[in-house]
Length: 200
Picture 1 (cartoon, one colour):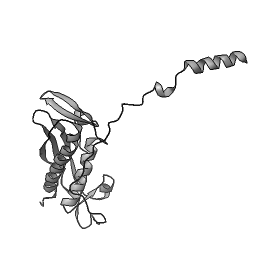
Picture 2 (spheres, one colour):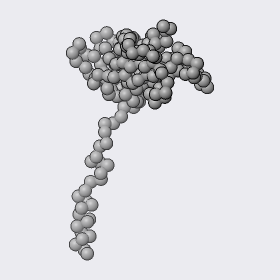
Picture 3 (cartoon, one colour):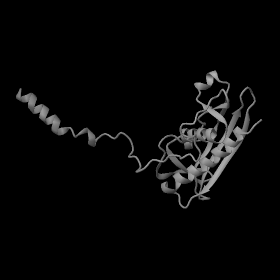
Picture 4 (cartoon, one colour):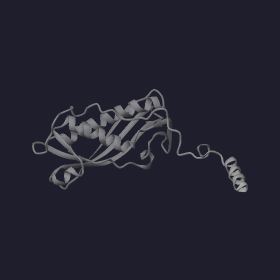
């Protein structure tokens, strides 16, 4: 019995606390970045696809450089770095899709449906690729580029259009990145919404 107790005591002394040995990921930055929609549906406003056109807005595809929570910086035409201590609260593509949905709903007479809701409704479909969503070190600008692809309700043809916005930043850092990218994303979303909502 004494031998077992001595062995157990030795193991406890030799084994350091787990909290000091195991890391469950990198330390998060002091704050997380998100997007603020300049136009969004009014609280309590009702919409019905029985009386208005409807559309489904899909989360855009992204290149690997921005398929991350980090904020990319185009250092040279062929090299990319990331802004120190800058991280999105969720993937930029999802943030942009939500902002775009709010903007389309607010600026057009269209009802934005989820993919599941659109199964029983002949809605238009907006897809695309978020080509740029970061900072350009050479020009000191936040750049958002969205290649939109629209299939209007009842049609099989696809309309494509590129939207881009550039907003100056005073410095390449986390404090400048968030507001500038939010402004650029709102500009792109507004232009895309006006294009989608234009009468045929």
